Length: 235
Image 1 (cartoon, rainbow, N blue to C red):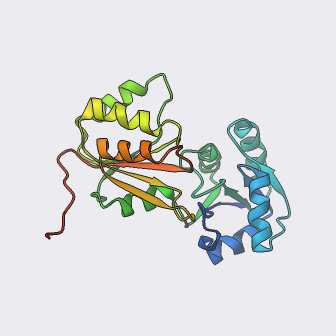
Image 2 (image 1 turned 90 degrees about the vertical axis):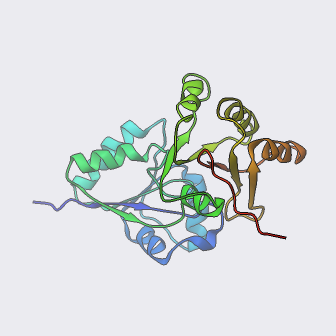
């Protein structure tokens, strides 16, 4: 009987390519198949690492169902598969979770290879309580958006979510209207050249963002629990 292969969840850099771990690079070079969110993007990473993956296939929201069936079949036949996203840890707010679920259901070994995660980096750099937090992924654009924000009113944990640079000011304005002017940290371009953490009351952060002109880059927002006050150094 053929032994099933292993599904490796390989974290890749979210900006700074130096953040790739030696274990991640070794794994990507050793597996039989690499399933990537965007193969064009991933080829650039492989070029930097000097890796030539035996087989590179796309795995994204539009083909997740079809690819999951194919990859599970390959795994059952003994192939080792590495799942990667464009940036960060696969399975967090991306379609990769469907492949993980299918692997678990088919008793296929799943092995996570640790590495960068914008979620964790934003929380730790925010200065807000991190022992308990609520991760909301990407907020709904329209349907269910208002109810999602209203559900946070009595939340006592730090709240973290991803947002588009085009919508972040509108989202912060909506949160302020519903939840009052609490502390927030907008993390932008984490690990990249123009990395920035904008902290303060929501109204002040909105003002800073609006004065900066067009907002660009990857955005992670960390909302402090109600009543949290940043420690201020005495003069």
